[in-house]
Length: 371
Image (cartoon, rainbow, N blue to C red):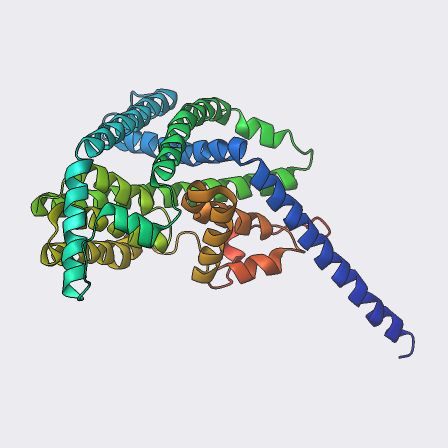
């Protein structure tokens, strides 16, 4: 009994050392991810886009009579061209709408000022309200022109990075055919190779299914919201529908932001609180039905992530990579959970990050001593 005490006591420093090393490693990785965002973000976006390309190619091959004569490489090429063309058209549409918005900014400014004046009169504010008084009394030292220039510069940088994303996508698709051979050459142990292939297949299946279904849901939501905004006569309805569809990739916050942008513009355009309120209710109803009825029915729990972990992942990745990090936060967090579940020392963390703690169905048994 006396000899067992030092052994038990000696175990605590080892566990503490492991925790300290894990925290230090996480901090270093976070720092590397942050400073390398300009290189890593296009690569990750291209990787996510490659899943969509492969998913679309499989849909093309699944069309009756097409898969029998269309080679898989040709369907991937066709999918890449279609998605690349779609992205270019979205960029052109976005630029055209921004230019049109700038041309009508004077009218929108007059409508906004009229609403502010009526609101001020309603609450009993005495005195004239103008943009000069608003800048002096409310905005203070904020330089609106500098903010607009900064926003335009950020948009230009984002559009310029699109070329780098598409370039990464092309090379990733070219490397895809040799990936299985590379996995087989990574180890001489067949069991390790089989296990590695299971992990890669699991990641590809789960992330590919999530992105494919999520993209379909976002397109449906964008079309529904486009119809609603068109019925209300909201200008730039196509632009706002695209914004809603893209923001819906962001968990939790994306739905609110998707409603907020067109509603803010509706306030400026209509100047009528009743019309704006009806638009808010209609867009919110569409978001609720798609997000709480249609999406769970179609997608289910394909990634097996805890809702709180999704929120934490959103916070972490958006702080590291901004909007791009918020968009890819769910797939990256799911990949981390899958990888952690394959290591004996980190499996407990994967269990905590999962939705129900059942990871057995995702892994294969490894020989003793190889975990």
